[in-house]
Image (cartoon, rainbow, N blue to C red; front, side, top):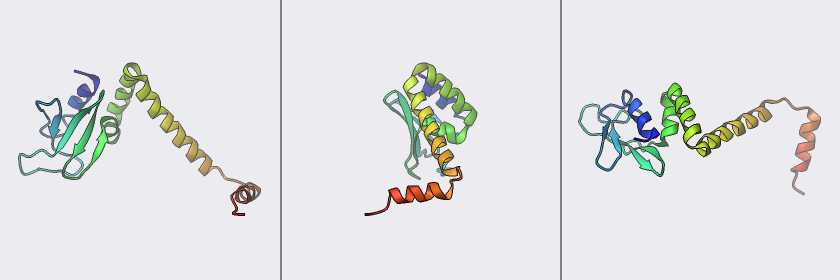
Length: 129
């Protein structure tokens, strides 16, 4: 059992009727659209893609990586997933870490008040000639 499967099983309380299929995927009911609440059908799947798992719901067409599902539903579990990812696969951790740093940098540059001269200088640089 790899790390992703361990975290999928920890999410089993959030996803009703989570069951492993013969193909190695996990089928369940979708918590995002609330499918199949009155029947036995399961429209959502966690399926293996390379070294990790992805999530898909065929009813609401929600598609996401396991990392993003954890981020949306269980932030504490997401933090422990990232700690494990840092040890197992540093590339996954650093790509997410760099994405967060980039968003922080963009937000900081947008939220920083600028002087009128700075705005005038930047607008002159982008004028059509």
